[in-house]
Image (cartoon, rainbow, N blue to C red; front, top):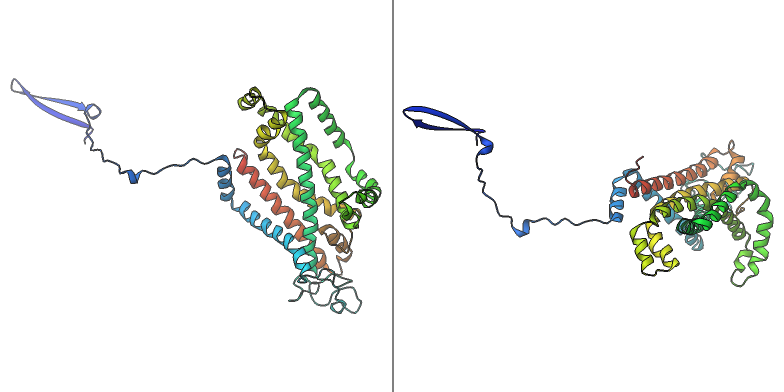
Length: 358
């Protein structure tokens, strides 16, 4: 249709031309009926589904997630493979060492088809088997410490933020007091007495006899230190979230309906602060794995022959020149675990909070 239509008429023998804008012309269009089958239904998605979709769209986060899942599977499978005799982390192979009885024979720390990561100097134990079992030990300590940290921090943060007033002030001062303690000094000073107490007094309680094992006692001490000094940041984050949530309508409605404090804390408030808590979990795990390795350099933690990433790396420092492979592989594995866990945490944070981008 032309933008301008011309209409001609004859008046007293003269031709008169008029122009009418096309916008004033009536437009008749043929409506095509839409079949019912052609209607596309649009389904809404929950915030969780949207967060998962955003996480899956991030390729770096997905690659890190796959590597994290593989590391966790290795940690779960290692004790099973040791029990089945497939892995022998403490079996010595003196025949694989050189004439001096220290450095492994062959290039790159004695790497072969039988020992893909070589053997450790001095004893000739399979390094791959020891690293797999070390992942189990270090990841168990880190996950247990993370769970205890998050539980303590979330509960105290919810109580402080929701109650306010005197309770909030008391929890705040406890947080300040905890953060003021020198963690390293407390770690070194309490290591001996606390481990002895765990192996003696704690193991005497019914059902806790397994703490007489020195490895479990040392591991429990590391977990206690990590949790005791790690919960204040979690409590502060959760408290900040609760301060805004407690003023919302659904909280007032629950109060009017006579909901108890327990229900308000764990049924109304907690489900609305799980996102920052989840992010903290993914970021605390690699931090605690690194902390466990650092503690072993200070002589605190699980001792050999039980392998952890920390004590293997601490032992490998003595062979940096004689056997660089023995130093490089545990360090590279520790760095890989920390990096992929951190990337998963960053991806989870970006997926749950799309306003923040890397």
